[in-house]
Image (cartoon, rainbow, N blue to C red; front, side, top):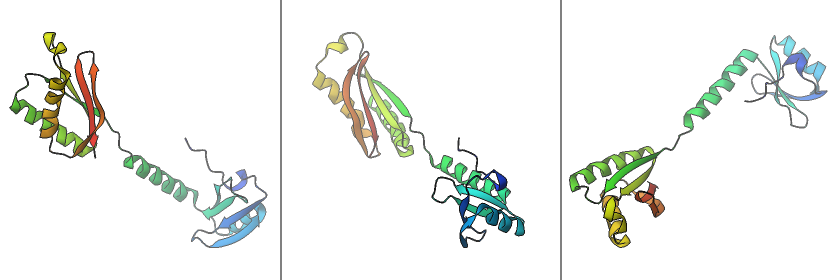
Length: 169
């Protein structure tokens, strides 16, 4: 969490670069002069940038300042997009219609910006089949996905078969 901004008498710096409510620059003033200007305007003196040399303070209403800061934080949070890894599971015998449905769903997920893990489950003797044949089976669904994509992690052997990860280009 962000540290609280100091206001009025809580400010400790002996001199401040003061900015007015409309953005006008008053220059470097002592703390007492800055407080007098704020009181004359019936507003608060808010320390905006405490680590600058000299620290920057603004004369404005503290309630408005808090409102604008909260608004900025909410806007920043809304722009963050969480990327999930979605999974598609196949077997060697998965039919063409099922593959097209799964590829269509994968295309929708890619459009949303998610990563997709494609798992080719191998049961029984299928675990010992030719790797080239198994990779061709994985390629079959990759060709059907309508959205442009790239392979983030190439096909690797996993405990239950083969899996690879794709993501949007």
